[in-house]
Length: 467
Image 1 (cartoon, rainbow, N blue to C red):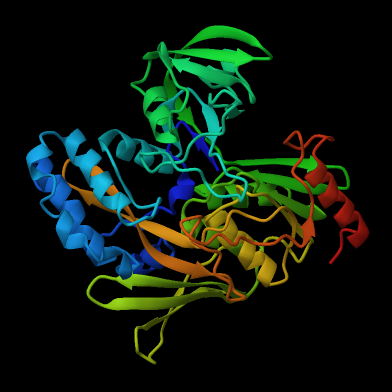
Image 2 (image 1 turned 90 degrees about the horizontal axis):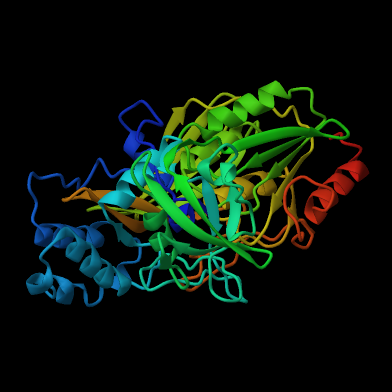
């Protein structure tokens, strides 16, 4: 999982309420596990008190949480902190203590700054310095959580966060920072042991404001001053490799226009003989983005099935399918044999049946796994790499008083073959097994030292790059 000066999107799939243009839009965004809950509780009163914010979070959880068994002592939290909540910061702090009792690291309350950053990110821009950090995993491949519910960062032996990637043209890039640089301090504050959320807050700020980083690389320590700026991100990168193979790197499914950008990349390289889609370290993002990109490679077939809690209605199950002309939603409610089918516009299959390889690793998560499972189970792609993260749950969000946002686990998704990938390390973490196992390379990217990429090229050579 990665982050561009933001909270890791692997904590949940978030949504674009404008993805579909008819009255059933809420159902799509909900069952795509990426939605704004416009059909239920949307709290935006004027002048809310901090206690109101806390109570709104307490009230929303039972309505939306998928695992109702987690609420066995929920009543005891209603007024537990009333006398201690004097500010919005207190409300967020104590609400997250309450939410921790659910034992779900993906259900959390974001403060005003984090909520605004999330909205910026979905639009493809944010104010920051342009660097990506990673989430730390234990020996079993599970995310190592911090006390605030967000993951701990990938760190060096001393516990300092390591930069995974730097955005070209960003303040970090202009200062000479690059992957494998270690951050030792931010504005003079030692950052050893800080969570990813803490680092996001410390790296973000107003446009043209400065932040001073202490960094270390190859044993050499230095200090760099960066001027924060708006960072426009393009999650899609494409290049042609030998053999006329199109290598397409997708950093995340987090931007609402990512499917359009991916389609443009394919159209610009329509003469490619095969495709390698690199989803390594892709933490997921918006569900309908994953579906639309899958449409670019599938003429027909089941894409995924979702089970989700609907306030006041129990649970609904939706199966999403593709026909040559439409995306089809088939929905049934709890205890009902009635299936409601609706059709939506889809993106065209531009792949023309050409061979497709998807590169994955242990940090390929959420919507990235949804996409991978859709192509793999439909026999449309060969998956190369290591077992994926294993997160078959999704989070919706509820906007609460004080401009804060509740992320909450509302549903599970299943691959076309019926596999549930697990809950991302809360208790179960199964992931997608690659078709061809290839160890993580010592160096990433599309260079000759990338052993997984070389395995993909070798595989395509055996296929003659024809299907």
